[in-house]
Amino acid sequence: MSAEKPSAAFVLSLLGGIFVIIGGVVTAAIGAFFTFMLGGIGGIIGVLGIVWGVLIIVFAYKLNSDPASHSTSGALIVVFSFLSWIGGFGGLFIGFLLALIGGILAITWSPQAQTTMMGQAPMGPAAGMKYCSSCGTQMASSASFCPKCGARQS
Image 1 (cartoon, rainbow, N blue to C red):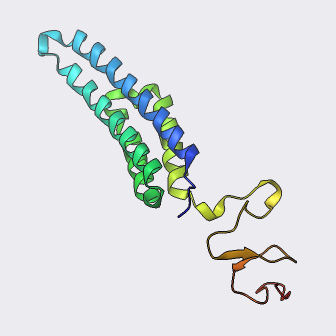
Image 2: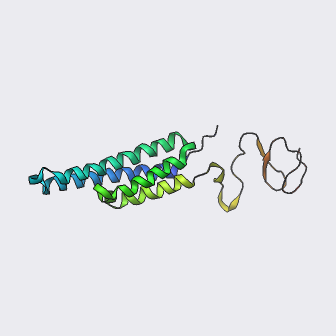
């Protein structure tokens, strides 16, 4: 099992969730103050912002603890980032933006897609895999010949 995790998606989503909670608290405080005579209904709307922020953080942690569910967690982070506009002004906009980018990164994350600069091969082969000694193509460790260049493997 690989220890690879979508770290950038996790951090951005986590920060986005924190900002969404802050936006919800600000909205709740201002809303409750201005609608005091109406039973503080404005404060209730701000509570929604807090809930969206907590849910973004929950799915960010789910993303970090279970990278295999990255698509589902990322999609839910994107949904709750859009919902953060209801009751939290999108986490003062920065929360919305951070969570949205984090969610998109989570959806598109792939452990195989992690390569070094300049298009070089990944740092190490996956379990049961090796690299061609001639062209660097990843292949099954039992392969006698490279499927790309045909070089004999030792």
